[in-house]
Length: 389
Image 1 (cartoon, rainbow, N blue to C red):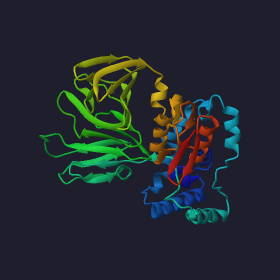
Image 2: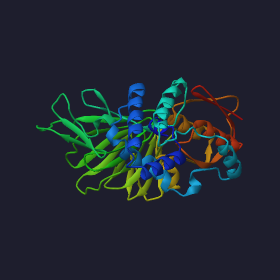
Image 3: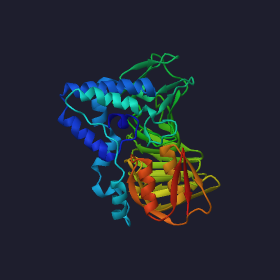
Image 4: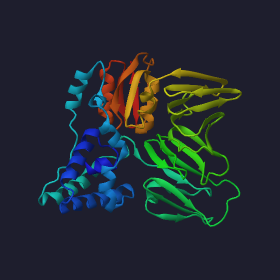
């Protein structure tokens, strides 16, 4: 389970079992040795930098899975109209577990992990996991995970560090022009970080945010692409403005989600708390909690409607939520998270999908659950999902 945690393929149920085991055996030296060997193996063969001494705390504090554990049980892997059939299908798909034994079997367990390298990782499909990069003003790129607990000095003398997910910039000289940095989560990734003003952001797969390292003047301005959830730190003297192409979202302090992928027909801004002002051309609309604004590149209209905010932020909370959703929309989201291509054979299914499922499920189990709904048939071929009626 440790390996599946670090490669992002662990399910919510397995994560819960892993946390329980670590809580019960936190003082076991042999468990610590196994964790170290797993970390060394992952570092050597997967090019992922995992600080061994923080592995235990990292696992127990992972917000992706904590959110999943705090949800009602029926939100885990349940399809509203096909719950019984889905449960049967899930039961026959047994996950591969690593069992820890208080004996010489510990060493054997790690050796078995290494034998598992016969699985072709290039063609295996796993759920996304926490990963992102930081692009500095000079164009250099730094993996976000490598910043935790370190101080990096940039070419222009700025010291950059991150502690408990918060970015901090220190400089010994005044900045005349805004120094812009960009955090990007790739396909198959997501990331949570706190900006220097205390604003928290969550980046979905294939998303980015560009921001100044220091917010000066009477406005805090950022630019985004993809999908980003904001919890803006309130500051009466500095308005917070999000730019999405020619749409502007203005706030003082609030919680909201913006979906602005290039392959989506509209930009959707969903308000959870507070208030935001949407501007598009000469049009302006003020949103209330529970409302969603839609804007499109080819028109200056702003359409506002009441929505289920849970649906808009399900991705942040660790699961997919489909509410009579068109198959093409649902598959775009799945494709980004699992980093796979989607291909349709014949006519595109017209029926809508209803239900919820954890984002950390094995992709085969997810596709089986989708197929049980009767909306369409799904087949995984290498890194492509084939969809047909």
